[in-house]
Amino acid sequence: MHVSHLSLHDFRSYADVDVALEAGVTAFVGSNGQGKTNLVEAIDYLSRLSSHRVATDAPLIRAGAEQAVVRAAVVRDGRTAILEVELNPGRANRARVNRSPLSRARDLAGIVRTVVFSPEDLALVKGDPSQRRRFLDDLLVLRAPRYAGVLSDYERVLRQRNTLLKTLYAARGSARESALATLSVWDDHLVTTGTELLSARRQLATDLAPYLGKAYEAVARGASRDDARIEYSATVDPEVEEVAQQPSRDPRSLLAEAFREELARRQPDEIQRGVTLVGPHRDDLLTTLGPGDEQRLPVKGYASHGESWSFALALKLAAYDLLRADGDDPILILDDVFAELDTERREQLAALVAGAEQVLVTAAVAADVPEALRGATFHVAGGEVTRA
Image (cartoon, rainbow, N blue to C red; front, side, top):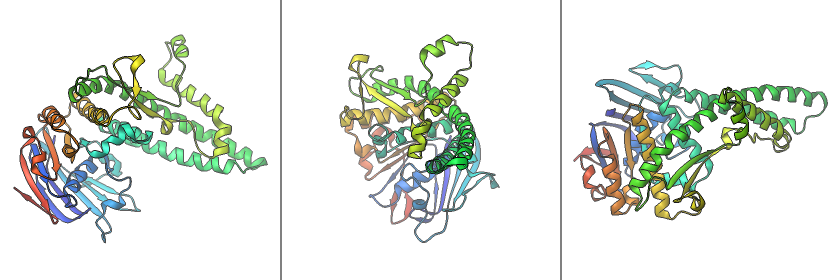
């Protein structure tokens, strides 16, 4: 899979720009603030319908414009598809495939797959749990686009339930009884959507783990593939003994049952605080380093800067390898990442990704790009993108 053409209208710093691309390695070189990252950000946006740099769409619209358009020609198995998304802050975004409108913009997610390496990746190990949840959810959608709908449904239910919890605190008499009955309905919805999301995330963490160990061994000096580990930590988790005693039951039904029991247990606290305290939105992906269980420590707070960088890179490499194992070669985006790495890690990362069908690199100076990733080069300056 690769992008053969990119067209932007009022996206970030670009009023209009068209760039013809090829398979293999392409580097966008330019000083900071010239717009090189905006180009690869647009391609990644088509993949996930969100940016790896900002949380909302508003900053993606060029100053003074009302909307932005990202359009790309994507080649997969010799066939070309034109993907387009229209960003409309405050209104629903619109998407098209081969000029035909999609009923929902989110249906575009996952058609093109990207894996981004960027300085922001350190947040995967040093940031709060929301960063790691987002990493898992983005990867879920890339592997199975239907999870975009599951995530949307869960977030909608969570918002509605939180609103109801806030009203319950002050409710009295019949109004309270009515609100509690409504809460029971929202509990059902939360358990249904939350169990599906929780089950998928746990399986994803299991699938990702062996690729992580292999990747960490490749990028960290003197490491073995057993050093780096991840484990999904959930607010809802059936007891091991309970699972062992009921081997014939569907694991999801046990998970749903545990979810419902935990909601009932925490209901007084939730009403007191006006917020849902149980569910996938409170979970985390635990990241640890160490040669054995007794010496294993959390990456956050204990790992050195170099170890943290290696772990973050290994997570992204693991995601890339997992997607490749699914049968698709995702587009790799290396956004200003080499400036953050020493020479040895630059060469290691370059050697690991050089064989990808398409690699897009951004760098302030051409010398930052390792020899293994020398290919087509575009200079980016003053809103112009020119082939070297």
